Length: 125
Image (cartoon, rainbow, N blue to C red):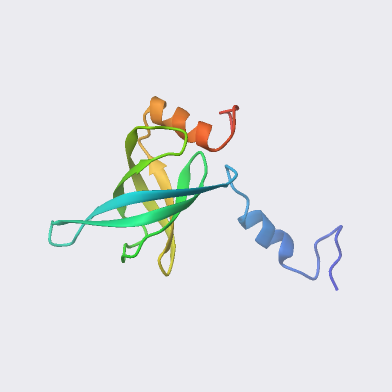
């Protein structure tokens, strides 16, 4: 039996602690172009769909095999913007064709667009 005060008898508190996120996720539906360097040095591009957005990354379905840890280039247009943006991201997780991507080297103007699309006016999170 689980004791809620001590946490004894279950690993649930540890599982919850491992699931804590830096930023909350927000539903989004955007088409994106993903480009990744292949082992032979060529560039492979494929289209996918972004379906969850946070200040630090994107959840996406990408019909391609991309290894965890790979750096990729993204091209997409956010709903609250008319301009296409180009971002770099690192693949942090993969389950089938469902990828967790973390943005890297994000310019300030694009970060403001990301925050706006998360529905937050507070960029301190």
